[in-house]
Length: 281
Length: 309
Image 1 (cartoon, rainbow over the protein chains, first blue to last red):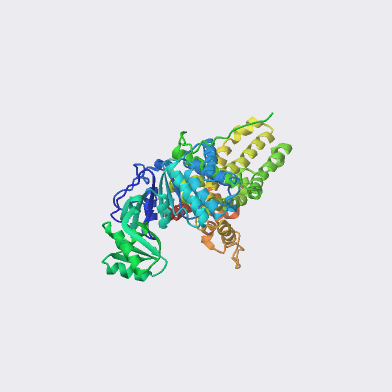
Image 2: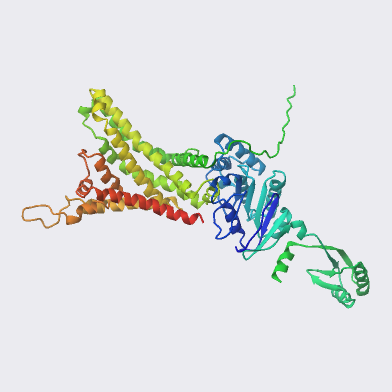
């Protein structure tokens, strides 16, 4: 990472970027596993590689496997709570609570080796939550999950950030995950921050309109361009950009002239994909 | 009469209790290590091997103790504390060779270690906690047998207070000898466990080293193993000549015994290779012991430094 400057505040913040962008390095810096060669990475106002006790209030869910197959989830979480500094009795109570919150209350006494991938991901999340951290760092929490498991995991992450009041830093290369879950976004590429801001800021309505027709799409596009309107194909639709109210009249006239049958039309919202398009261009 | 009740979901509750930091983390790791070594909280199968070792390490002391009490110490004419260490040494070597990998390998293989080092715990805390778990258990097993022996000898003598008065020095001696033995065997076991994530491979490495080094040192390091060509006077010339006591130091399992020779200077039941190594300047076996113990610790530390990044 080079010349990076960003701040993670309350709520759910996503770190988005392709593989090798520096997402895992950022998390390692905040966990104190790596020292910055210049500058500082502070978490809860402290340097994690100096202030070991600050780690009592940090939760971490790694992307890779990290669970002992021979133990039950209940025993494992109670042990991890103690390693985070909780007394044994409190650790047992918190273990049961954390497993209930991640939806594993009934299965908590079974050995982890008998769990499905989705259940293991929940145990991983549970161990990050068991000691009631102030902030949780999640590295690709939906990795390896099927669509249903992914939805459930993202809902859980959302609940942690909103209902539980725990700040979340979520690292992912999946734009949809970040778009659905996060309030704020930091986009990394080749070790640099290319964008940062609120997710709603990136996905707000634009001044463009998308138009989907059942037939004569090429004729419609040609007609729009003949009228001097800025229009282009995007996926299966035509995106029309204009800055005055007359734009809608042009679209109406072009549809009539081309004989196209209108299926759908509406204001186009920005997507996180656009960020990468812009940075690539 | 109908019983009614309501279940309330209080939602997520923040933890307001004490946070005991690094101290609690270290203690929890030590307790977990002892429990893992003994198979506590694990399946019945996991308890069998530690159970067998505990029996093997304490049963000789109990048998000797019962004989001493029943027959009387003088009539029994049995082993002393130094010889007892020799009797249980092989079990002790195997115990640490099996239990050391049990403590380290699964954490690396399952990558649980990545969760430890992001908590209030450094890599040094982790390694110290694991080592202390194995060390304390090994020490407890060595001391248990020695304490049983000492008490039995005292009870088996005609004059119990007199026995204790005359032989009180045996207590600090067997405490020191236990420390020397436990420190060495646990360090070697953990260093070998740091080389692989497979418990069986790590145990095989250590046991293999003990087994291979023993006959080499036992044959070439024993001054009674004579050259085929006797001297005209029929004198035995050891095969390794003047290097014989040095070769005696190669038996990895006997290295603590070479040092304990100086802890129990009056013991008359030394193995031939222990007696052979005792011909060297005492600094040599002690330095060899320290070098291997510290070297094992350094190897362990170096392997785990790579994991922390």
